[in-house]
Image 1: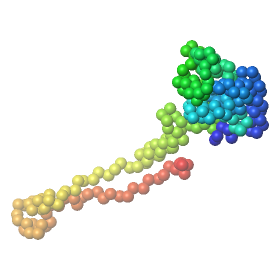
Image 2: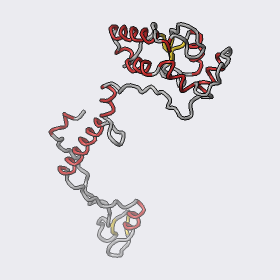
Image 3: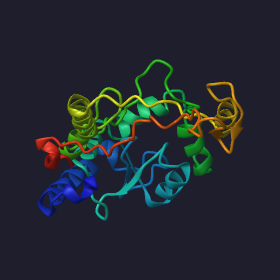
Length: 240
C-alpha cells in the first residue's frame, strides 16, 4: 500500500500548517540555492526550501540526489516533515556550502546546484551530512518479513512440506515390501536353452524327440505384479 494513502486529510492539513510555519523562519525565507525570496518548494531528503526555478533543476539531478515536493500541492509524510523541522536551509548550507568562497557568483545557478550536491565541491570535510531516515515499515510489510524463514522460504511453504513428509512416512508404514520378481530371460536365451533337452536327445519344435515333453522354459514362474492400493491418512483432507 502507498504510504501517502495512509495520510488523512486532517494529518495532511497539520503538515501544511507546520511547513508554513517553517517558511516564516528567517533562515527559510530565501531559497537555499539562489537566495530568491519566498520559496514554495522543498527537497525532502536534503531538508531545504527552494524556489520553483531551482526545484526544476533539482528534479533533473535524480531522486537519488534530491526529492522535490511542493509545500501545498503534494502530500507529506510525518518523517519528511520532521526532517524539515530538524534541518532547514541554515543547517543544510552549513554542510553543503562549508567551503564556498565568500560572495560567490550565483548567476549560473544550475552549475552551482550540480557542483553543490552532485560533485559535493564545497561540502564540509568534517561535518555530518543531514540524512532523512525513513519511518519503520508498516505492519503489513513486517508481517510479510516475519513469514520468511532464515533460508528465504515462506513458513507457509515449510508447513506444507512437513505435511507432505508426514504423508510419505505414513505410506512407508502401511505399504507392504515390494514383491521379488524373477529376471525374465531374453528371447535368445530361451531359444538357446530350449535347443538342449535334459536327456541329451534331439528336439523337434521345442519338444523332446523321445518324450515329446516341453523342454526347459524360463520366465514361467514370475510373480505377477498385483495392483497396490494404500489407505490414505485421516488428515489428507486438511492438506492445502
